[in-house]
Image (cartoon, rainbow, N blue to C red; front, side, top):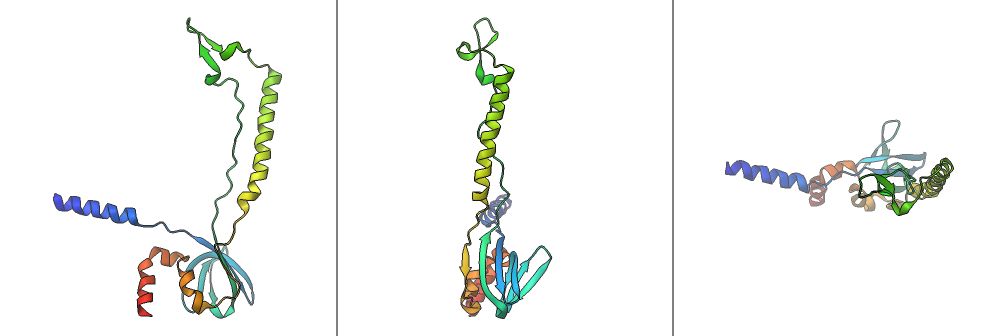
Length: 177
């Protein structure tokens, strides 16, 4: 029983220490054009990226510049102002047990409700129209215009999916050198 508990706690600790794999977007400028995709694997002969069209291998001799960015989630519309005159927090109970508005206010008219809903909608739309372009800005984490694969190989490997899943491979290759 004791050995089962030790194995259980050890495996839970190992799983908890495992780092999540983060995909990175790579934009590579080559002599034949630009390529854009998720960085999968890097070796001394080239990079393997996952593009929309499929997996592509790009040879290191053809690479002129490289940029690496984080993948961003889509913008979530936010609702900052909510107009709800019939919410429970606008009411209080009297001693006799019936509901009445706080501070002896009157119920809103149809015109008040329409004005309130339109005002809240216009404010939320304006905020989201201003905030969405700022969310779309995605600066490069890594950028190198004068690309030299021998010098940059170790820096780039940490961004590839393969080396994030198997970090011990990076350490083994460092020992071989």
